[in-house]
Length: 261
Image (tube, rainbow, N blue to C red; front, side, top):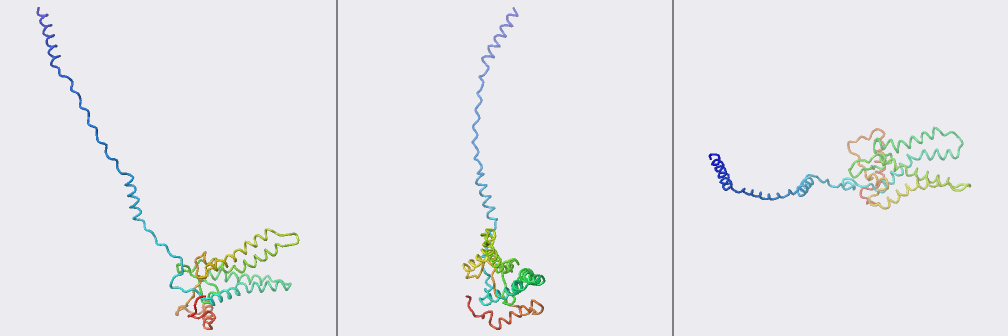
């Protein structure tokens, strides 16, 4: 009897627990997080580039023209320089060449002396002083747009103009023979002659600044050179400068009030 009562009590408790058990509460769905606005990476990158450009210093372009403190050499002075340089550079060489063509003798030492004189005025003088004997005699010099002398090769190439003409003509004339035309000599001769022809064409185009081919390549201008009052006129170069003063006093280098032509 007691066992039946115990079973009934357990059954009643189970029913009460089933009734009292609350319904499972539904979990609230989490609210959707608002999407964070994307960082303006591109704009930031552009801003950084702009800042870098602000820090960048733009250098002013220097005009490659004749400095205002210099004056272009006058026509008589330019002619005097060309004449003196021609005599000094090629005078001995052409003299030996003429003697060699007319006299059957050994001219080895004369050839060596003539070549040394050419090298002295074409290479040694420009390296040492950036001027030639003709520049000293005509009171002229070459300067660049920076107001400094150009590289010595400028004077060397300018002095080779006569040599280019002579070599070019010899090669062209030697290309013609009884066997026909030597195309190699003819081609080389024309190529060599093209250099002085180009120099002449450029000098006509740039006649206002009186620049030839090599002047244009090295940005060089021939200007008048005024010797300083305290500059000594002793030694070899001093005597060369004094010869220029003598030519100037004779009026052979042009007058101070003479206009450029």
